Image (cartoon, rainbow, N blue to C red):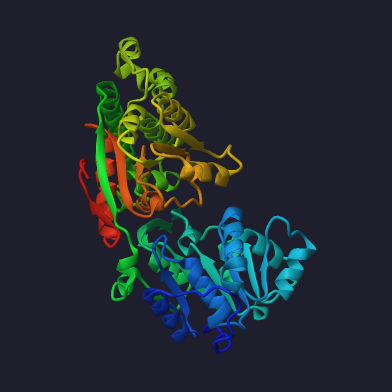
Amino acid sequence: MMPQPPPSPSTPPSQGTGKLELRGYQEHILQRIKENRDRNILIELDCGLGKRVLTYKLVSELFPETRFILTVNSTSSLQETAQYLEKEYGGVSGLGAMTQRVQGQQRRRMLKESRVVLCTARVLTNILKRGDFTPQEFDAIVINEVDTILRRVGRQSVLIQPWSYLLEFFKDRWIIGMSGTLRDDHVVLDNAQLQIREELKTLSKFIPKAEVISMEELSGTDVEGYIEPTVINVVAVESNLIKAVSLVLDALIKSTRDEIYQAVREKRDIAVDAIPESVRLLHLLLDELPISEDLAQRYSGLLMIRKYLYGMSVSSFRRFLHHPVIAPQIDVERVLSEWPRVTPKALKVCQLVDMSGKTVILSSYLHVVSEINRLLSEVGVRAFSLTGQIRDKQAVLTEFKESKPPAAVILSPVGERDLDLPETDLLIICDVVNTTKTIYQKMKRSRGGQVIFLAYEGTSEEEKVNRLIDNIMHRYPWSTRLGNAED
């Protein structure tokens, strides 16, 4: 069935004291939504270009009589979105936000009585499964970060729970999905047939008959005037010992990967040429391949140790030099005696921060966050740390923003969640994952400006970083350009 069209749009009187001046590309998107009110819609709008503005205009002015469900990924995002919709430009009429203060019967009453309901997908599902509501009681659902409803790898179900339930529930309603990017891929293994699919094609399967509004389409508007390009540099970090250990790990990983291919050849359940050469995709598929558990665990373990080598502090990694797979390949006592006392990447960060004003540093490991904070403080840089252990993120960020340069804030993955830091002069990424979109989203924390990737010179990490940057430049050409160390 076609999605049910919501009531015809009209323009109500102004609700608030502020006046929202739309940009040209935002007007273009809203007009396209208005023209396609009988079709589902997928909107790609890059970071910082105003998805909340679109949501506000959509529910408050374009369709002021329509009953909307707005879903977000996390409670922190819910709080921020609720604050925006409640306070900006006079607020949204009939808004109900299912924050942590709203519980039990209050949530069901809010879902019954509010015209616009803001909630997380999990909470929404728990309420709907009670059977108190029917799809006909709602007109439309807006899915924020719609790309995140897909698994990176899956066999039968490629949807993250609870989206298989929600999309079935709302299949005859109007669905609008918004995302900063719809350009990743994922792996599907179904009946021994492996496919690497573009996520946009998969989303179009679960959100059928959808109009797609892409960044390419917006290039004919004024959007480029609102995008500050991110200048990307790679800075090599020297460490002969880390390089030597990495070469040992590279050889062990390659030989183990060859064993995997040989095991698959012998089983013949899956064609060897169907297995991706990509290290990331192969790792994601391990549980689906006809290989022994020991072989799969050895391969995963070696990849993890190499990741630790490139990202951990040197003091934390020392114990892995005794690993039974690595120790026979090196002179452990000699390597330990010459092992660095300070993490080379942490030292490089100090050099780079000394030349900048306000710096944001991203690291995956808490020991590195602490080490960088200590080293920067010792050289007179005002340093702050944001990790999952910090409850009041805004207080720390406010102090960082108000500090005189040089100042730096070091973020762990949990600490950086849902943060935007447009006041930054430089963003330093200490270690990378193998997913292009994740790295791009990390880069965009600073909304443009200078971004530096650190990589150990002469290692597979350097190759990995360059490969990721090539992918980023190809997928997001409107927002990135290559620089050099002197930029």
